[in-house]
Amino acid sequence: MSSDPWGRVDETGTVYVRTADGEQVVGSWQAGSPEEALAYFERKYEGLVVEIGLLEKRVKTTDLSAKDAQTAIDHIREQVDAHHAVGDLAALRTRLDKLVETVEARREERKQQRAKQSDEARHAKEDLVNEAEQLAQSDQWRAAGERLRALVDTWKSLPRLDRKSDDELWHRFSHARSAFSKRRKAHFAALDAQREEARKIKERLVSEAEALSGSTEWGPTAARYRELMAEWKAAGRAQREHEDDLWNRFRGAQDIFFAARSSVFAERDAEQSENLKLKEELAGEAEKILPVTDLKAARAAFRSVNERWEAIGHVPRDARPKVEGRMHAVERAIQEAEEAEWRRTNPEARARAEGLTGQLQAAVDKLKGQIEQARAQGNNAKADKLERELEGRQALLDQALKGLQEFGG
Image: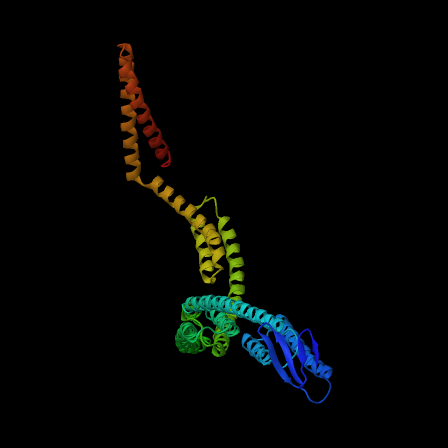
């Protein structure tokens, strides 16, 4: 018979292990000595110790699932409970119990972690949905479209929630994207329609512009081109593939017309510049008629200058007032000389002037007498009033006398 602190072998070769509940049969050993029997079952115990140690390490250092850990614990516990090893089986059970506690703690920790992650994922997806619903109302088509695509990528990177919650949020998210796509599609369809309408309008404007390009009615045609340009701007843009070609044709037609007009205007300007020189020479000749000393000769000289003036064509518009003003000044001077001559030689006008002068002279003499009388009587107030009246009559008399002189004294 052989024994150690945790087991023994009796005479029949039966191996026992000592436990708190008494000895338990481990097995039967007939192949060798009792010492070999104990050593064999002690090695089996050491194997269980190693197996438990490895499991403890895996639980602590790897992401072994709680389910797989519990399965491994149960497998070892079955071996321990079967009493097929010699050693401190109670200590192994204690280690297994602690390992179960560790696994449960890990299970709870992971459960809380998953709950936290799920809660974070829920909030993140709710934020994505809210942003998507706001973007669905945006008119910033490119920026909003790019942002919605980025939100989809973000959604895919987030963990799934429970099926009901995940499906509800995804439905809202998907609906927002669909609403935006529908609005964008409608917008660009309307834009395409507008651009097609603009293309038709601009085709018509181009046709008219090209038809006008050969016109020589410079003023009306230039005015019509300005109207066409205003209509062009009001029409909006056509499709990109048509806009540049239409504009090049439209502008090309205008260029043809305005180049032709510029050529004609350049010739006209050269001619008008020459006309200006001729008229300036004639204006100088007319100015030599002044002052008028011989009215008949002055009239004849001006008539000769004016006939040559009228035979000359247009001058540049900005120079016209000055050169024509010089001729008009000479013409007015001759007219004033004619009027003065007429007044001087008109008997009726002379008689009227002499009569008016005589009346005013009599009135002045009378007032002077009244003033002397008032002063003599000491009535200075009356005299002052009469003197003021005398000043007015005297001024009229002076003017009448000056007019009478124009008739030769």
